Image (cartoon, rainbow, N blue to C red; front, side):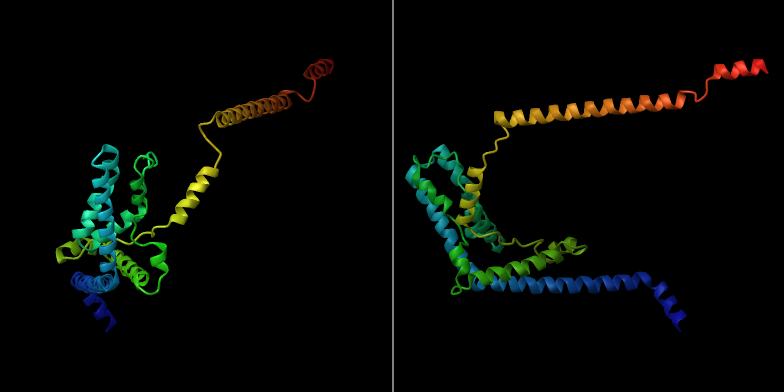
Length: 259
């Protein structure tokens, strides 16, 4: 009985493998479909309205700065870093909105920008979607929806990146991946980073640092030279011991002649 079963499995190995693979693919796409529906549900519940509002605020801010200063090179360069992403977030799909949210939270003005000359540009530093106040509030449901969305997006991406799903997904209308929300805007974190940078007195380009490096190299070279001299001395002593005869050969020759 077991022999017949083994023969059947062996003779039909390829068809069985194909059936198992098809069942596996169907089950994986079923999971992907469930995760996609869940993350879309979480997004629609609280995040869509919330992000649309935040993205509109960012667009209005950039527009007001352009109207105030005009398209001067310094201003245009800074704002152009945001405009394309903001416009995609306004008219794009779920993935575009998440990408815009991440870009707004990460955005920081170039330190070379003269804020005394263009004070309104400081508003760009305050652009963001998920700030600490909104993330700690239990009233709007945004923090929970964001967390649940990230969970389902992560699970979806895990399956979508596997073999052979990644090659079949796009033909079945599935996204190759979903963007995941990054860290929220945090002014306290930025202040801590700036303090650490300011307090760090070590400058690799300073003369003192270069002198320290030079001294270290010299010390290392001297140490290597001393080690080489010690090795040579040991080798010489060893050679003397091996080659030096333990008996005077001239005395042996004299004794042989006497005998």
